[in-house]
Length: 355
Image (tube, rainbow, N blue to C red; front, side, top):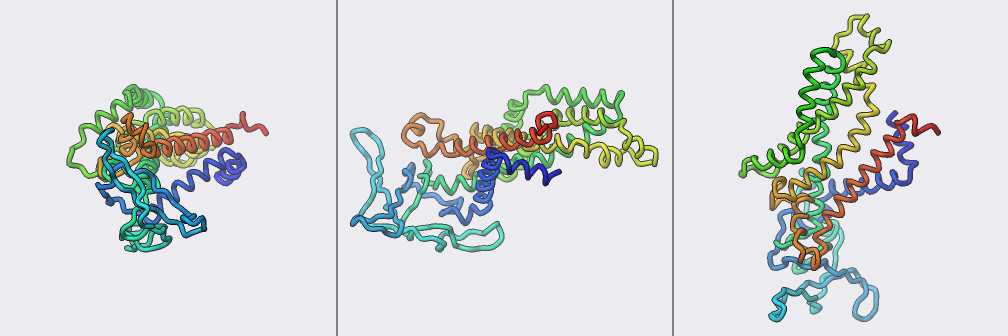
């Protein structure tokens, strides 16, 4: 079934484009240390709010040249009381590929210094400008995306086993057990999830590291989302628990847990696949919203949410539009996941897939 889904998914041009976009994003995040010209700890406070670097391939004589850039010079305008940046054309800084730069651990294991591109020691190359602390926005997008784009999948690994087993047990046993379990699930569902998320995130100890906070947010997201999923699974279990193959398993003495896990829950595979693809975007948005409000991943660690927080000021939106890049990536990623989820739902729905 999985092969058939993938084959039909690839045939749809919109789904194919979404898969390619997500594939490029995740590959870039996996190799972020190599692609980023600077490490996640890099900061040059003299270069706060520097515009994106201009890359030149034609020299002053009109001839093709190796790619090079100029550093920005910071100037204060006494009349407008603003800080302006202009290009220092006195020295070229050539872009070097696969060259040595700041040391890092590739995939967290091997210590190397090679980066996809760098410039000389005195040069600075900021493809998407810098933030208020002089940190390279392009590099931070790659490192921050690792958190924003993986939190949804990690939450699913906690949420779906709980929801599947809870819904399966409730639907299979029925009666008072079903009533009690469903009333509890409905009580959880009645709680406004985002407000609860804000409350739980706000009471986390202030001394926690971003890694600890990240894992707790994952658990919180999972504990909020399992109830609705379990309710749907319970309904599907009710519809199949009296099928012949289930009754045959009972007749040969199979245990109730084995019947639930081996014979009933596999029948929910189609729904689970669709639910997973459509759930990831909501968790990406939840993490981004928390970090935007200052309750998620904390500075100096990056996530797309806390990077976007800096762009909420009107002056930054007007004069520093490169700070909006995290919001654009969140939009593209969520849209891609939703397109894939909708197409998979159409593939698995026999009524909409008559052809």
